[in-house]
Length: 157
Image (cartoon, rainbow, N blue to C red):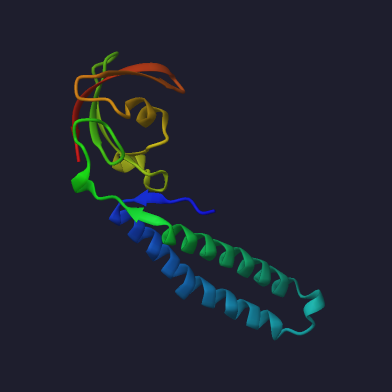
């Protein structure tokens, strides 16, 4: 049974673009490789043919998984989300109470996480520790480097 996953419009668009690339660019390239290998003669001892067929199988599996993911994807309506507490798609400004450093993160679905863009996975330790909290709340979060206490300074969408 397939699991429904939530995405931003941007995240879902990236999945669709990846699927389109696999179907329109990668699939024809592998078909050409198979045809070229087939033209070389005896298929029973043709390593190029076997490798191309294996690559085709892996590509088709990836295409199938992406199609399933997209068909079960739902776009989040950010306009209906509550800004008073930290939830998925919240942009949270935190203050590290140990060193007074301030940082901002957006909590996103796992597939959209990108630390360079300030997007952390909803399943990360920091995000899990912030869920349901409000501005002014403190969260003691266990991270690989130990335990850090944060104060929530701002929540926005």
